[in-house]
Image (tube, rainbow, N blue to C red; front, side, top):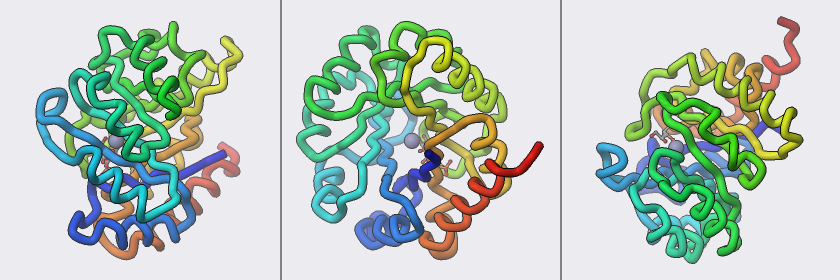
Length: 224
Ligand code: DX5
Ligand code: ZN
């Protein structure tokens, strides 16, 4: 199943509830929430209070992407605030297996994320215990960056690894997705597609989500 995850990073934070609602009305039940700490990435965004506010404003699945150092310290607060899925960076977790188990033990669905410079084989030992693998198609830290095409090959590799292992994680991609490349992205095998700038950058988020989804679905059924 293909899903679009609008990233609220590019929304107008002064009207966050409205913007989130508009994106959801475009035809999705997911919201991607980018958490940055100014250490793991060179930018600072939001924390548990904003997740809590979103939680009370919507029933959407909150897909929380932690771009922070020492995520174990903050995971309980994000679960408490209402995060449904919590993804941590492979590069930020020394004891990745433990961190994934922590997320699961608190009742959220665990995901693992890899930066553009991190090979997929570094995830070999955790593919069977995660709900999702998120492939970064930009270096994390900012919305509106240019898509890095090498991410497509990582998505394809993950699809093969999943079949070989008989695992059932979902494959998500994040960064630089637009109407121009969403077709390629889903044909490579991405099942959850994050889009920030393409949803909230200009125009109506409802229409933007609907158009992205329609374009992606058409591409999936196109013969190549
Ligand atoms: C980047 C974030 C992304 C970002 C995507 O660090 O993880 O989720 O918001 O935004 P666009 O779609 O604008 O690249
Ligand atoms: Zn993200």
